[in-house]
Image (cartoon, rainbow, N blue to C red; front, side):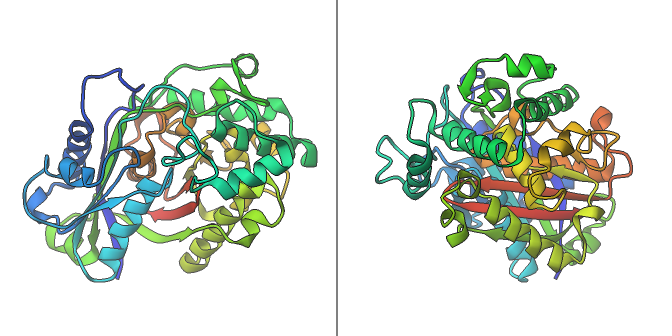
Length: 396
């Protein structure tokens, strides 16, 4: 059975504590927008998977109740930075499995100021953290410093890539420059400032070679998507809104994540490769068929690693790919037209659903000044340490 996204919505992503609202307020805003976009009422929704990382148990119910008290099942989803796409995957499975005809996937996060730690539940003791194995690999090869843990592990992956393939600091900065430039056309983005490569290189160091303008910020925000069956589309005349979820896959860590002792593998490249292969195999499409991509650029290096994992270039050639302009307007693909996590923001539970919203707008031709010309196939990539990688292929 096929599944379709017929409605999407999101709030503006904002710096934590910059707006006087609660997580249920932002969830109501995004959910209401998605239902309005689909042209349906909340009482037509049969199930609600809700993603978040930093709120208490059953916060999903507290948020969903703002949309209506209909008694439908609400599922609380927490999969670190891949939480939003995990909620979307649950919605798709409910529909494609024939269990439900209309499901609302909702994701939100209300975060604290400052750098993100080593995962939503890492705490201060990495020995008992869910990501202890990941940071243990990093510490064995690179030590453990005082800089923010997530920046360390990705920064060390960047160092390995530079040493192994000759990737330059300027090429890493080009990712940040591109995504900040894209976000200037996105009113929902946390930042809309444009920076040169030199300004990004000269920004505050976080963990060399990464500077502040190559790192995703902590953010408040919410996003939502209405996922329905083909018969629901037909019954309610939603063909003009419908974007098909052609294929979707989630992978978690395997031995390949840890066996090499490389931070490149620990931060998820093997998971992305496996999820991408499954999606392309299931859909009969390839990366060459994709027009627009929203991928998980939590740090600039992760965008480069994802280019390679998805087969957009040869191993080690990602720096040259971004330098050639192949991943922006006028190039082979447009990657992160929204501004990506680096500039749009990264409220963990909302990120994967915000990616889906951007792709739906792109594939419908509703993205305004950031519209990718003739976009028909979109790919979303959302990853979380601990670990989970979700790749979603959408088609109009």
